[in-house]
Length: 217
Picture 1 (cartoon, helix red, strand yellow):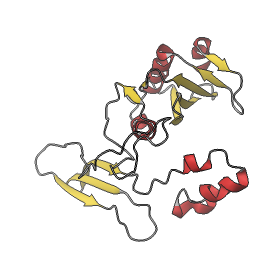
Picture 2 (spheres, rainbow, N blue to C red):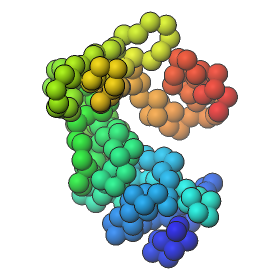
Picture 3 (cartoon, rainbow, N blue to C red):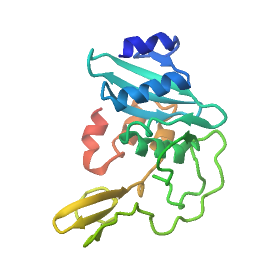
């Protein structure tokens, strides 16, 4: 499927490593439809202010591609409307860069809890801080005999902080939502322009329970 779609893409010649292609809104939508049909798999989704990038794997041909969608007037098309796992990644990009995703099903903040000194910190012009968001807003689950169980963000041991809200019917978990971002450290920005030797200590501090794995990578 990637080979067929690539006819609508433009190769970015200056990109190092894997080939990167630039897609317009229609081609980006076709990616979403491929994810919806499970012909494609999403390996990663990130932003850099001027564009949103997706790492895509073709299930049938085992091809791999990096596709970029330009951000126009602060807006980009959403993959989350087709593929639910993309929603949290788009919410993170929204918090960091201030990019608005058209038709994004869930616009709640993901990383920014209203405690940062600025909002959209990775944008070209960061915005004033958001007001504290207060208690997290969770999606409703309705039905007889449901109860909610809150867990975290403080946990025993070395697990990373996170708040988890279980909605259960007896032993059956009907819905589970997470709220992360409590220890977001801005490591992406700290590593910009650094040599590998300078960046490695930052990478090792991404996750306290995976410091060797991140440092080695």
